Image (cartoon, rainbow, N blue to C red):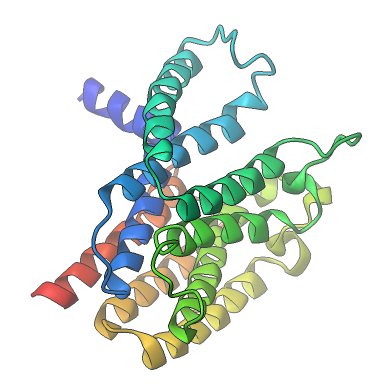
Length: 269
């Protein structure tokens, strides 16, 4: 079983899992809007997510990211460089509108990790801003980017979908913030740090209720949305400071993949 365990750990540490989650959300968006499946855009989103996540996680730790001595990080770095090569190739083949959207969200991701000019802080370390920046990036990449060429930006369905996705991602991040409450510095002022774990769970349920209302009004596969929201509620209620190792980093982050599976079942079965 050792090779299986090693592969799974590498799968998590190398950010393949969140990349699969973001790609699943993007594919769900295309299904929601009855758009054709653009494999080029999906591949770019998948590869760009791996690069971005690995840069945020490891470039800050390894100040000299090009000269890495740690063997495990070196493997992740090599994967990032390989994926990055294909990401650049796919980016060059995207439409101009999609390239602009990708550039804007990519810039926002860099600002999340890199310090402001003449300052030591970035968006990630600004009090209370972390969860909202991540939610904006994830929702933008998974809603706006796949639909950049669709001319649907002026529709109510587009903006309600983006809003719902933004709120969902905030809720999906709450178990991570509850887990990290023991190690996050007080200056981060995360939601659990400010209002406590119990009120954080209540806040998440309120946001999920609003997401349900949006699904009732706009969803083409209400069964899929309800299933995803129920499972999210269960994970949220079970969130605690002392979580199992992969409760958030695997199971919670699998919710977009689960949602996509339910959506496909609701539409095609």
